Structure formats: C-alpha cells, structure tokens
Length: 313
Image 1: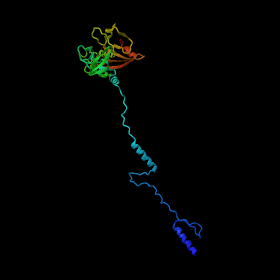
Image 2: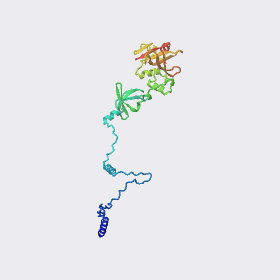
Image 3: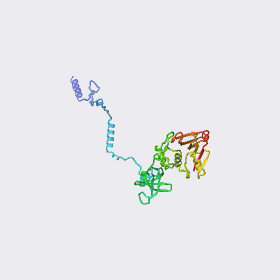
Image 4: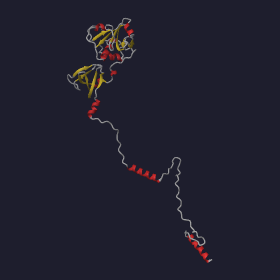
C-alpha cells in the first residue's frame, strides 16, 4: 500500500516538471505536452480607402526595390545636351548666303551696274534694263555683286527681285489686256514700248506680244527703218533679212502670219506642232483688240488661211 502511494506521488512530481516517467503500473512513459511557440500571424492586406490599394510585397522584393532606388538617387545625372546642329565655318556660311542665284531687274527705269560697291566718279559700267536676268554672286552693304554675260559689277540690291512673275507678264487665254492692265505695262517696260502703243494708250498689240516672246528667248529682229510694222506686213518687211527664214511649213517657236476673213493681218506664236502638223498658237487681237487667245488648229484648218511662217534665229 505504501509502495503504491509513493508511486503516485512520484508520478505527480514528474508530471509537474513536464517530464515523462515510467510508472510501475504503466510501463509506457507518460509524456507531458511540449511547449510550442505561438503561431506566426499571417500577413494580411492592410485595409485602405477605395482610392488606394495597398500591395503586400515579399521582403526580398522590397529590399531590391530600396537598393535600386538608392542607386538611382546617387547615380550622377548627365547634363542636358542641345540638339546637334551642323556647324559651319565662316567661309562655308558665306558660301551658303551668297550662293549664285538668278534675279531680275525690277526697277522700271533700270539700274546702273558699277565697278565697285560705292558711288564714285565714272563708276557706271553699264545700265541694266528692266527685266534683265542677272546672276547674283554676293552682297556688300546695299549692293549686290552680279554677273551677266561678260559683265561683272555691283547694283543696288533693292532694284532686284528673285520672283520672275513680278517682272515678266503672265497671260491668261480669253483675257483682254487694255492699256492700264498690269501685264500690258510690264510688256511695254520689257520691250521699251518699241511700237509706241503705250504713248497712244492702246490695248496690247500682236506685234508687242510677239516681240516679248522673242525677247524672252534671247532673240530679236533687226528691223529696217521701214514703218509701220503692222500685223500682216511682217513677212514683206523682213524678207531677205539676215537670220530670218520664211516658209510655209510650221515649226515650233516660229511666227505665223496670215490674213483673217475680214482682211485684218494676224500674228501668232507657234507653241507646238504635232506629227500630223496640227499646231497650237498663242496670239493677241483675235476677236477683240487686246484679247489673248491660245488655240489649236488642224492642218486642214490652218492651210485654209494660207499662212507663212517666220523663223528668227
């Protein structure tokens, strides 16, 4: 009995110490409940307002992000660089600014070409008339250095324009060009009113238009002193002149002369000739004085007019 009581006391003692003991009555060891650490709390999203959502990131990712942020903070920032632009030396810039360009004399009275970019005694080399084309090769002050044929000199740059239409007329088929029309005035300035129609305030004349077309191609007729030079009489006045050829076959850039049904003389400029001998001509004065017209005629039609064709070399 005493032995049983001692065994119970011994069991209680070891139970209190958390150790297993072997009871004489129960050979299996008695195991006390081992001490366990409290469970690690689970990571849960932080509750936020609807405008912000928190994202839980693994510790390794956070560490890498912080390291990357720190590296970015201490990384030196390269200075801003301007957009690369071509660099020119002084001479190259001068070449670009002063590159040769064709310009036209726009001063109605013409302009003096002088030997140096300054006024001086007997400085005029030549006088360039209105509409003269020159090659500008440089500038100095208010003067431009120009070259034309065998002449090189200086002219006032304000007397020049790069726009040909400001000097040379542009005609529109069907338009009547009276004495006050801008294109009529340009024409008479260019041909120096050689027929005197400007003094008489006449509409644009056929002979003026033909003379202008020849002049635009650097061609001119060496007229005799016989007058008047009316349309219908040109072939007679020019027959036998040097550089003038008269025939009955149309050629591009030749002058067509004929008599209309009402007996009036007509002059036209042959713009084109087809293999079938159809021709396109531009002319002034058909149907109405000063009217500019462009028309095409078949070989059968123009042959009925019995024209002659004048070539000017």
